[in-house]
Image 1 (tube, rainbow, N blue to C red):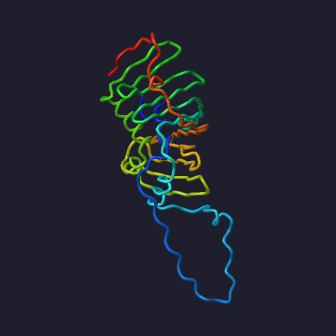
Image 2 (image 1 turned 90 degrees about the vertical axis):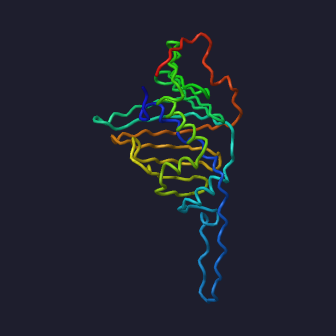
Image 3 (image 1 turned 30 degrees about the vertical axis):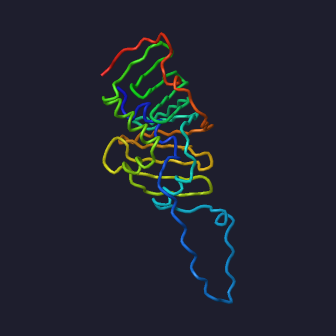
Length: 242
């Protein structure tokens, strides 16, 4: 059975555009005292809203300004590193999310393996063997899926489970460091939000055993996705698993 350290950990936080908090209004400028000294001009980055650290409220406000989409499709490169021998492995593929709770994580190389949630059941599907294991949404697999979908579709849920360590904005990019509120398999989360494209472009998870899972996401597409995208092909042999 897959645990969070397995392939399923990858899809977390792909969409960063779903916070409902209102933007924090800017503070009025303080009065400038009269002086004969020259005041230094603002740097180009400051003038353009450049690099700065963000509070949690400012992070929520930045998220609220990002566009809200019903669907997200991205290409990914997933890298695992660590362990006793420090082995590094890479997998590539595509991930698809659609509200309210549809999900498809497709590893294409080096071996095809698809994880699908159709809103009712979770499937671990192997295109090569044309077979799939079906898991109940109320079992451990379903619980993990609900966490993933909730975090993808609701940034507020993320801040309920994790404390903000640091958030830094540089132009359209926001780098975020988080730590869990309680002990578990994940000990730290790092991600990068692309404010221009409204999606998470990088995700790195540090696990309790010191292994890391890193994801680079690119080519975001927010066009509507047909519901049949999340159904198994005809003729697939399905076996039920607890």
